[in-house]
Structures are given as C-alpha cells and as structure tokens.
Amino acid sequence: GAVVSQHPSRVICKSGTSVKIECRSLDFQATTMFWYRQFPKQSLMLMATSNEGSKATYEQGVEKDKFLINHASLTLSTLTVTSAHPEDSSFYICSAAPQRGAGETQYFGPGTRLLVL
Amino acid sequence: GEDVEQSLFLSVREGDSSVINCTYTDSSSTYLYWYKQEPGAGLQLLTYIFSNMDMKQDQRLTVLLNKKDKHLSLRIADTQTGDSAIYFCAERAGGSYIPTFGRGTSLIVHP
View 1 (cartoon, each protein chain N blue to C red):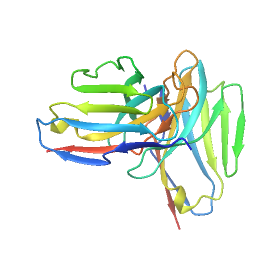
View 2: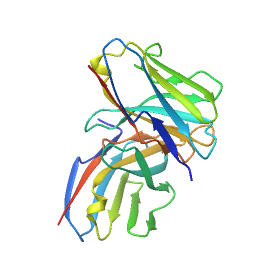
View 3: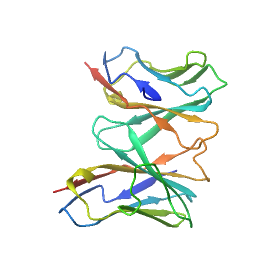
View 4: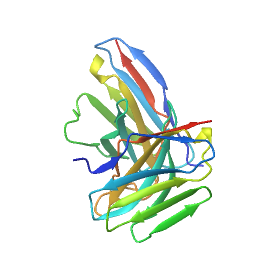
C-alpha cells in the first residue's frame, strides 16, 4: 500500500513553454502533498506544501507564479512550471501524507526529470 | 553550516557492514529518518526513530541515536550490491511537520 505515482517520469521541453507534472496517491487519500526539487548530488529542497482545498504554502525563494501548485482533490496534486527555462531543469519529486502535516509518514513519488532546452 | 550533515560517499565490500553517519543541529528534533534513493527513483523510507529512543533494529538495519551529540547512524549488516544507493538522513523538529534532509551519502558496494 501507500503508493504515490508521478507523471510524466521524464519530460523534455523548449524554453518558454509550460510543463505540468502530476502527483497521485493511488491507494490512500493525501491531505497534504509536498513538492521537492533535487539537483545532482544535492539534497531535496522543499518547494511548497499543499493541503487539499487550500492554497499552497511556498518556501522562501520559490516563485509561486512560476511554480503553480494545485491540490484539487485528495488524490491529485499538480505542479506546473510556467515559462520554463534551462535553469529549471531538475528532478522534481512529490510526496504525500495521509494526514495534515507529514506526521511520521510521507510517501514519495518516483520523481520527474525535467530538461528544458 | 547545514542543519543535517552527512559524508557524501561510502564504499564497502559486499558482505561487510556499512555504517552511514549523520549529524544534526536541532536539539528539538522529534523524529529522525533514513531514506534510500535508487538511481532515477524517489525516496523510500527505510526506518525512523523517535528522539526518546537510543536504538532501533529492523532486520539488517540498525539505527543508533546519540541525542547528546546529535549523531545518528545507520548500520547495514551483510551489505549487498542491491544496497547501493543514496541514503538520506532527515530530521523533523517537534514544532514542524517538514523534515530537513541531509545531502545524502552515496553507498557503493563492490564485490
């Protein structure tokens, strides 16, 4: 149980286009979902926290207008990278928690590799 | 300095024990975690320990916590090639529900 999927697993796009990444909890309802960004050989950087039905809370330095997060249902959160540029190329990982806040349980998706040309 | 520190690399021979170390700075840490990330994949929670525990064992995994020194370790017994991955230490303070991750230790297991 507790499976989190991400789609797509890998995407290549042209500079200036927008890319949407989906994160789904497959067998549980995720009250809270998190979006992370990971650079090579670096740790995970939390970008934002979203609770179902409310606006996402962004970490300092993360542009909310560039990284749009929607958590419209208890099983789906989307991250849209708007007007992507090469510096947005990264590995984006979502995680989902079955209760508000992470508690001690946070289930991670397999990640989405974004390459912006 | 970083809130959670780990060495970046560890190389061991197959069959030996691996010990991955982690130090953290937040004395109010409540939960301490070890995650495993295989190439191109997300993070898998291996184990976690509450701050009021000294040790937790789960099959080949042993977690030791020295709260006084803010030091956490993960020991993998009889390390196999399938254990090759990046291992992330993370801590979560009592007042926060967001874990803080270290940069990860890349474990390389060679024959």
